[in-house]
Length: 96
Image (cartoon, rainbow, N blue to C red; front, side, top):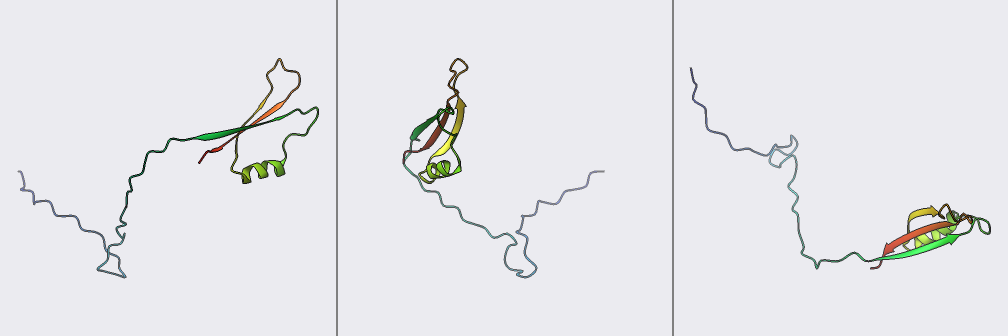
């Protein structure tokens, strides 16, 4: 036997016990601003260290570069055919 269904009831916000008139989760408005499209522009900096002559970069020089906005992206050793063993430190920062 089929039973008739009651019409759907509208959903209501749950209310907090301490404030029965306010929703438990307040509605937070969002504001969207249109901006000019900005293309990413980057600056690059390479530090080359020859371990036969200099120590690899320590914390102080790295911190100084970081304070100037440089982010260490990679450290690579010279290619296998290069016997110098040079270290290449690649840094990047926003050009804006």
